[in-house]
Amino acid sequence: MKILIATGRLAQTTVEAAVQENADVLVLDIDIAAFITPGLLRSSLPDGHYDLLLVPGLVSSDFTDLEDECGLLIRLGPRHAYDLTSVLSCADELELSKTIPADEFLSKKLREDALLRVHKHEKDAAPAFELCKKKIGGSSVMKVMAEIAGATGMTKEKLVEKIREFEAKGADIIDIGATMDAGIDDVIRSVKTAKSTTKLPVSIDTLNPDLIVAGIRSGADLVLSLNSGNIDAVKEVVLEHETAVVMIPDQNDHDSLHRNIKYARSLGIKKIVADPVLDPVGHGVVESICRYGDFRKKDETTPLFFGVGNVTELIDADSVGVNALLTGISAELGANILFTPEHSDKARGSIAELVTAAQMMMLATERSSSPKDLGIDLLILKEKRYLPDAEIPEKSVFAEQKSKWAPDPAGCLRIEISREHKTIIVTHRQATIVGTDVCRILTTAIDLGLISQLDHAGYLGRELTKAKIALDLGWNYTQDEPFAKNSPDHRG
Image (cartoon, rainbow, N blue to C red; front, side):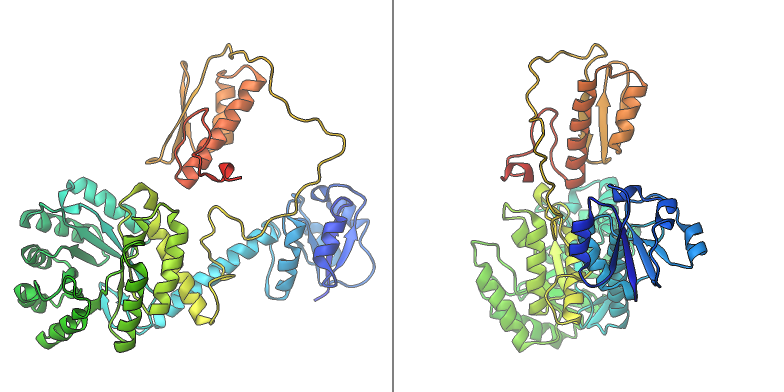
């Protein structure tokens, strides 16, 4: 495919460096490439045949008429010249857009293709067994079990809300966590509420045999956890309802896990998941990972339970990286269920992170590669690559502190956020504005006459942007205060 890249004078060097020998470059009589028009392009088209002409992704003009006139395919290239290398490397395989910049289009297409591969893999996968049409074990994608900690102590309304929240985050299994003082009635109410709320498999999380029996009879599809101390008390109801079980070792006897599984199978229990128990960092995490490896060498088929939350909840580090790494380790160990409670604020988002991580590991395994350049990723606070830095002009004015500050006669504004509603709240003595779009909130404040000074408008824009970033990333926000000391703008 012969490709022509149109650009302006200021971007010429960057474009030529990115394109190299993979396309021709047309430098138009204009400084800013984003201002290219059909008329300017028409008068500058060179002789010769090209299959595709790329204009900068930030161009807003419509080139449809010029396309028809010249018989030349004109599409949007990337927004930044730096990305031309990636776009040109797969230009033969893409049908680029007239309205969506190529880098955005490429990113979207790669993600869609990746998710389609995940869907096809799961459709074709042979599981060890199924729960509510969810494939468990075998060659299926790792499933995420989301525990609702203290579920038996919640009101029905709160429990339903939590289930809906975990469903929206992508959970594959909803786990009902029993409190220490939970009674049989609490378990019955919680499990029945869950079963009437979701079509996902529901598990009950307790070692108490009476509560396990109550949970199974109320409709639980899976129980956590059985060992030699409680299996005989619940075996009849497990067999009657064909309930799936997570088997754990006896206390202080990790070698007992194989014996407990063998005994469960001798009773006729078929749907078994093994949990060698993942220990927290500082309490034997390496040794416990080795136990998983040893288990998988002896037993290649029994689905494995991997308690990721045991680590993420007990380490003061961003959960996204911890979850990605642990999911990669679990994939190498052949684990099948990733467990997380999202109990602490710092671990919020773990469900969605594990879902994406599980998909990444499936894609990486399928192509026998490291989990990178897959079309989906878990890069949240860091960029995969940086754009080139801007040059600082020789003649520039260094910004200085304003010598004197005066309050806006129109009045003060208080800015707050609601994480629950994902909303920014701006309060003035005359009105309260709520919204999620910084520009709309700012223009609304101006239209209502709540701002009368330029410096106040600039201040409001700055604070609204901070509030929006805090909402998007799950950070705290306090007006006029910097982000937490560990946030990116304080790391140096």
